[in-house]
Amino acid sequence: MGNNSPYHERLKVYPLGFGNQLMSGARHANFNRALVLSLLMIMMTQVGYLESMNSLTNSEETLDESNDVLETGGSGSSFAYANDKVSAGDYHTCAILDNGEAKCWGSDNVGQLGDGGTNTNTNTPSSTAIDLGTGRTAVAVSAGLLYTCAILDNGDLKCWGYDYYGQLGDGGTNTNTNAPSSTPIDLGTGHTAVAVSTGGSHTCAILDNGDMKCWGRNQFGQLGDGGTNTRTAPPSTAIDLGTGRTAVSVTTGHYHTCAILDNGDVKCWGQDNYGQLGDGGTNTNTNAPSST
Image (cartoon, rainbow, N blue to C red; front, side, top):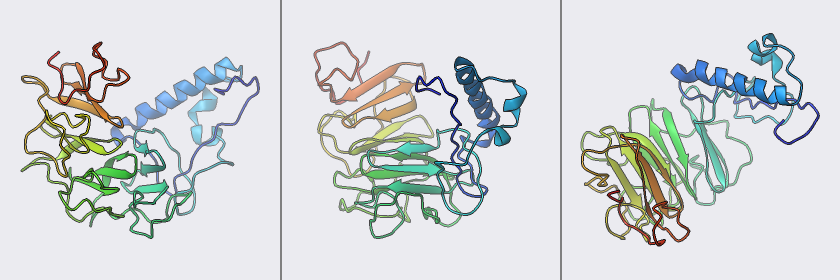
């Protein structure tokens, strides 16, 4: 399915280890399951293999998991219902399991897997989860070019991996780390993170009050702070998104950033050599969100 083949293909499901499911949160589980089943019915109808709706209601029995599976440690298997708890960087991948554990795999040349190991590339997830701190679990993860950030269940934000431009946000000496720090990023007194996005060399987070802050490389104005200086920690002042406006979603590219605001507006800033800011202008880099 999905490759123009006239032949029926078995759906490949990826077990995540005993009792572990990749999900978007318990309250969304039923929606995710319904969405997956709906998409399956549509695709199977296109190739003439939809037999009956009843055959899909018992998805664990219907889906074939006998080949090309992804093991994340432990025995047994369970099903992946949604993919918004997984993030793919340029050369590594990270996922959050239904028990809140985070695991990464792929390239580890600068510690981006967060396993505290010897920077050895791995082609399967470790049997041991990333150490996020005693009793802590992950609720969101973002894999950047050579580093990773995760929001924890208490709203703390931690990053690890490559830190040449200060993208880890720890305000330190731009030293690469191969595991999360015991101290979270300082987002401002009393504030926690609700969203995070990692780019090529800069990181942006939305705070619990809707403020947005970015740090790391700023050569093209991608931090949106009105300047072009690199920052090794979040600034004390949030990005000016417009009077009374807050951010509800953020995404970072290699050298630019875009955010959706609470009124549905989209604003972008940073490098614009290919028109990626979408402002219809003269491909001029901008170091702050436009007023329009």
